[in-house]
Amino acid sequence: MDTRTPQVLLEKAARHDAWNPEEDDTLVCLDVQQETHDVKTFTFASPDGKRFAFKAGQYFLFDLEHNGEPESRCYSISSSPHRTNAFSVTVKRVPGGKISNWLHDTLVPGASVKANGPLGHFVRSEASKPKLLLLSGGSGITPVMSILRELADSCAPADVVFLHAARTPLDLIFRDELACIARRLKGLRLHFLPETVAGEPSWSGLTGRISADYFRLAVPDIADRTVMCCGPAPFMAAARGIAAELGVPAAHYLEESFDAAVIDEPEIPAIQEAAAKVFQVTFSKQARSIEVTGDQSVLSCAKKASVRIPSSCANGVCGTCKSKLTSGTVDMNHNGGIRQREIDAGFFLPCCSKPLSDLVIER
Image (cartoon, rainbow, N blue to C red):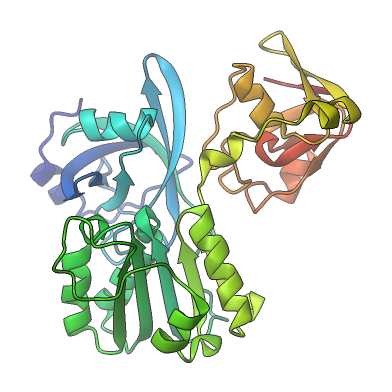
């Protein structure tokens, strides 16, 4: 526990030293803010007063400990990159979620945690169209909120449509702040879309789920915009299909996902399992061997067998599960979580790799 007060840390942040992820890994919690009944925002600073340089849409990888076991989680930055003395992440409590519940119940101002970042490529590029459509579902609002806050802080001309979908009006994260930004940021059109009016029967807006008809009315020029989307996998799948149907080029559609549910792969039917080729996967440091079929990811089977591999996104994005492959070959389909030089050196991502032969992994 760091006993220094938030004020002391903020005063130290007036220095111009920059946070260097290769040298620094400790953060101090400055503040905890309740956003909704099951969402909190945690604000962190460097204990040495260093400043952060990140792009709106990036995330930090937190290395935490739960019941004596190391756990890693990725959390998108929700604050503006123009505010460099500290940054915030916004976390939804997940039923049965070990780390989200621990953060909500345990983390208080003054506590220290370890993290690495900023990381990620869900950022606006210079090639992006100047007109934006920011789409968020539930807690997926965090990276696009960072983008909107950056635009608001810069006071630059903007042409932005921001749509936030949630289960109910009470689940609309940053609802009041978004309304405030919409009043002062010229060129911003704000849409809230709760699925039902539960908890707020006086809700006067539309309800339901996103659809092509909805976007034709709400964003008739969607094909002329860069679309940036983050949310649960079904929400993003629907958004991706609708955007393509309405003429958004693939190059102008970006999405961010940290849906760890990918780890929980469906059981393979007995007939299919008998036909699938089974490979032996050995974890040399743990002296464990498991069987993995050519239709399963290495990480999903390792998790089910209680083999310890740090992981977070399970989508080949964050690189948390990066491991050294000392023998064998895999079919890896990653999403930017590993560099080519690391692959050339024998590393791979178990979360998005299926075995092509027996494997020996240095873990």
